Length: 209
Image (cartoon, rainbow, N blue to C red):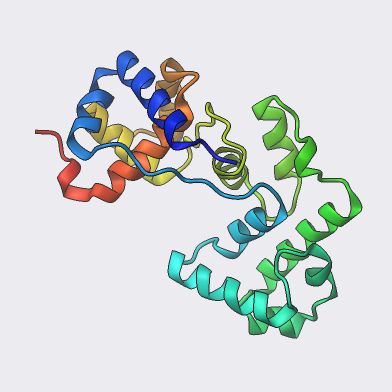
């Protein structure tokens, strides 16, 4: 499971001791809520379903998929479903292919969520072998479903925007610079990422004063 509320707060407190500008931001907007997802196939499939659509649309597609095939969390059901059933749930041809690819990886045993490497980069490499799973999806899964506290999704646009705002940079940092800036925040980069999304959601209220 993801970082508990207690662990998230402890990691943020440690982070703010390293980076005073994060401490000021926490004072402005408060601690973020936890983001915990279940470990396993269903969470990664939901990531695929939610690619490039709003949260509301993704939730609607998931409910339709669950109703159409009986149990969207069962990879065997996805493999048994027809293309028409997947399309009726709102999955594009591309997403249907990704969903089947993930289901095949799981049912064949090539991807075992209970036995991902302990090393974060190796775990990411295992996940991105699945068609349709990029680095961002793998990082988000490891952070929210496994609670790996040093995951740093530097390619996320909101993370880049808020790192720039929190640190008072003149422009949004690139993925490369965001990754470099995060080096000094080890091993609390997961908490830093969760806080940047919280800060992003706070909008104008998060502007430095």
